[in-house]
Image (cartoon, rainbow, N blue to C red; front, side, top):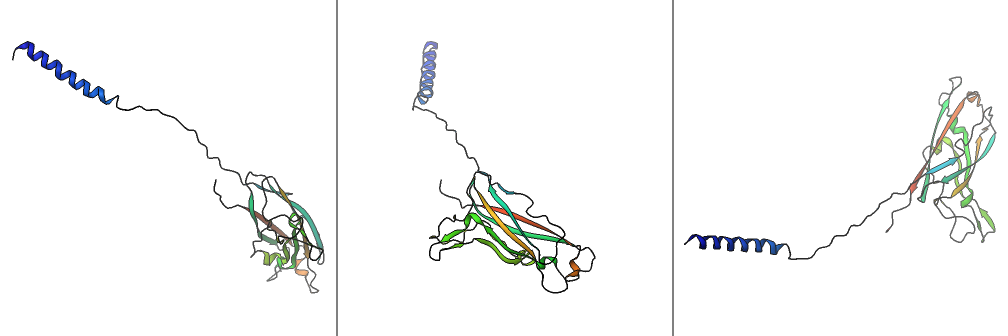
Length: 209
């Protein structure tokens, strides 16, 4: 094979190779689009006003104390329930309380959620929504009542449903009593009980969005 034929055959082979490679790049059309998506979590934000519900001194057996406060949903999510956790400590002034527990002598007569209270047309009476009824602080430590639960039946008028929607508040009314049991309660003279109520907000159930 002469030199000219070798050169011609080389060019032909190179041309076919380039054609095969180039042909692959034009086999389909393409287009690209982007999407920008967001997952923004809501906020669960419960506040209590005032933050000190009761602060009283110089108590004696038989004293009754009523107080008012608000549970406020400052978040963007609805609240399904608000659980009340009770803790307390006692400063024993004389150190002679022994087995006596000051918390057994302080009764919460009622903790009413006024917004959940409704009128019963069957009895023509107000059905007060008492979250707590006649319970000592000692017993209340073993309980976690729901402060925003509605005890109203569906046919009652005015009372709200359970929960606390975003931006809303519930008006709470509570009554405490230092019980006079008719017996010697001198061991509690000068004592101080520090009550801590923790209000734990729970979200509503997830939903199909």
